[in-house]
Image 1: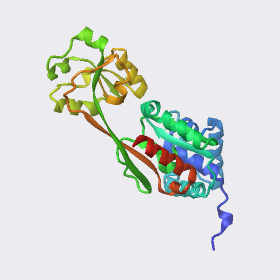
Image 2 (image 1 turned 120 degrees about the horizontal axis):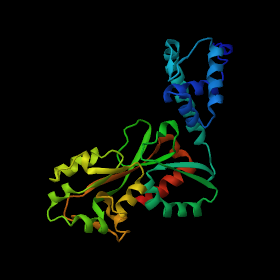
Image 3 (image 1 turned 180 degrees about the vertical axis):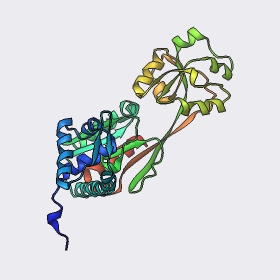
Image 4 (image 1 turned 180 degrees about the horizontal axis):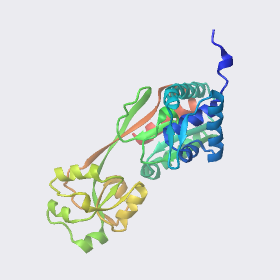
Length: 295
C-alpha cells in the first residue's frame, strides 16, 4: 500500500518548479502561469523546503538545475502529464454547450477566415466563451495551451486528431505604388532586383523562389514581421513583394499579382484537437463548425 503521508508537497509548488525548469527563468515561468514572480519564487522555495533538497542554483544571470533537480524533473514532468490527462478527461464530462474553448490560429487566419464562423457559433451557443490564441507559433494542444488549433501542416503528435481542410494557393503580390516606383518586371528573373517582405524568417521563401529562377537571398528581405496582419500592411503600403493567398489579396485593389503565370505555393490547412476532447459537446460543436466553415 502507498504511504500517502510521504506525498505531502503541494501540487501548485510542484507545477511552479516544473514550469520554471522548462521556461528557464522565474520571470518567464511567472508569465506562463499568470503569477507574480515573488509568488512563484515562494512556491519553488516552499517545495525545496518540503523535499529537503535544493532544486536550483541561483546565479546572477540564470537559474541552474542542481543534480537533485535534474533527477526529480522527469518525475514532475510525469506528474504534469498526468494532471493534463485528468483535466482533459474531466472536460469530456461536460454535457452543456457553455464554458470556454480556446482556438489557436495565425492572426491572418483569424482576421480573414474565422470571424463569420464565430458569428454563426455565437448564434448557436451564446453562452460559449471563445478565446482566440493568435500566434504564428504552434500551440501545444497536449499541454492545453489551446483546445483546437488550425495549423498549416499535418501534426505528428500522438493523441491528436486532425482533419485536412482547404488547400489555398499563394502568389507574389506587391502594391501598385511599389511597382510604379521600381518598374514592372519584364521577365520572372527581374524579381531578383526587388525588395521582399517575409513572415518570420525569410529562409522558407528563398528556396521556392530560387526554384522559379528568381535569384534571391536574405539581402532581398529588408522587412519581416512575426504578425501576418502586419505583413499584409507592409505589402499594402509598398514595402516590397510577398506571397499572399489569392482570396486575401483580391480584397485589396491596391495589390497586384506580379506574375500570374508563376507556380503558386500550396498552403494546407489542418484542424486539430486532442482525441479525448472530441467527446466534449462544446469542443465538438466548435470543431464541426470550423470544419464546415473552412472546408
